[in-house]
Length: 168
Image 1 (spheres, rainbow, N blue to C red):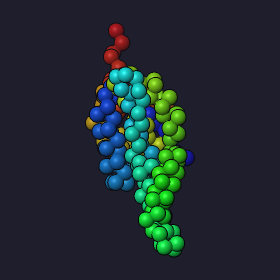
Image 2: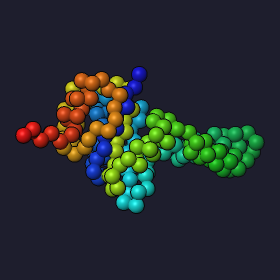
Image 3: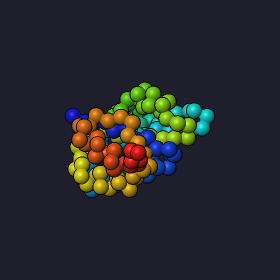
Image 4: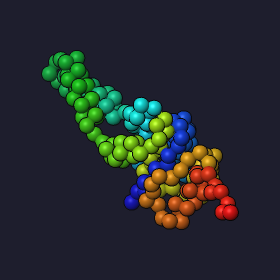
C-alpha cells in the first residue's frame, strides 16, 4: 500500500527543490515513489499541476512509433505516424497515473496565492535517511495531509515544519 504526503510551501521554487531532492533519493534507492507532483497557485488564483512525466508528449512519441510501423505494413508510414501521434497524444492526455488530478486541483485551491505544494505517493522508503535529507527544508513548509502512521507523521513534521514557539 502506498502513502500519500502533501507538503505546502510559501513559494514555487521550494516545492521544485524538494521534488528534485526526492528524485535524487529515489536514484539512491532510499525512496520509491509512484508519483511526485508540484502544485502551484499563481497570484491570480490559477492552479497548475507540474507532473514529472508529460503523458501527452509520451503518448505522441509512442503513437508516432507504432503508427509508423503500422503505416509500413500499408505502405504509407508518414500517414500512419501522423495518425498514431494524434491518437497517442489524445490517449496520453486522457490518462491519469498516480494521484488523481481532480484531487490535486482541489488541494491547489486551498493554497495561498503564490504558494505551492508537493504531493508525493510513496510506495516504500527508508524513513530515517529520507527525513534526514529532507531536513534541509526545515522551517520552509507545513504538512497539509498524510496517510503515514502517527509516529511517521510527527517525524515528518519535525523535519519540515518550523519549530513551534515555546508556550508562555
